[in-house]
Length: 294
Ligand code: FRU
Picture 1 (spheres, helix red, strand yellow):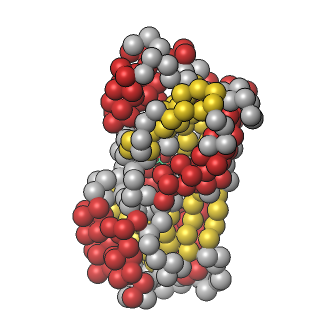
Picture 2 (tube, protein in one colour; picture 1 turned 90 degrees about the horizontal axis):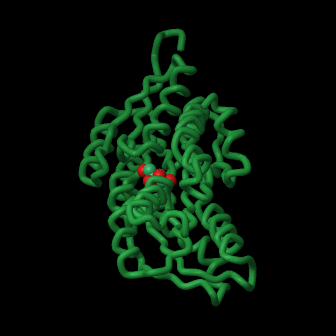
Picture 3 (cartoon, rainbow, N blue to C red; picture 1 turned 30 degrees about the vertical axis):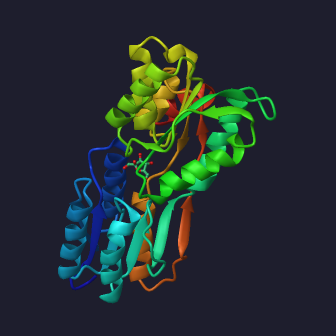
């Protein structure tokens, strides 16, 4: 703007401690740096719904020109997203949705597709279509989030067709956290002599399960599948042979901000932007690390 006016864009992030969230913030900050006409305000919900709700209320009071929000969970954030919409603030929902479709745009990965890709690969690892057999531990992400449900449903579209596959846990959530997944897996290992495959809804949890297995000397008997595929996290774990596979879940940081700017500039934006995914195994991990200078 010639008069020095800036677009004030607020971004309510759920937490900053998880590696994927740290990358997400890096991506949005790097994108903002390319747009001198944008003032970006980032808040940290500290992984608590109440804190994130207060953050969004605060951003509404500051009269941001656009609101970006990546919710802790759907139900708890829906009211405040609706408040922003009612205040005529364009809202961009990133990665995890809310229980309204009234927002301007959703930007995120296709979690059902990722779940299906993981399920199809699990079947292959356990012996192939029609022959797959084994005991599977699934560690859920946050129960109140769409990604966890989609990652579960997609996976089971493939694995449920295999009568030889048995599930050892009933909806155990590690809330996306490595330490919680470690405890779930440590218990599962105590009560089950044979575990063949672990499906963690993200890489930190797949890795937590791997560490639990390693601590009792059973990690070599088990395949571990995760999701996120950050070069400095999941890809490295695959390359080291800790995880068998991961699926990239690109952060919506850069794309989300670009879309908001586009909208503020008067252009039309699509209701949903779906970010791509890729399977990472030993076959391509080293190359991806090299491409990322790691
Ligand atoms: C980070 C995270 C990622 C996961 C995403 C799902 O908070 O748990 O690991 O892919 O959120 O919403």
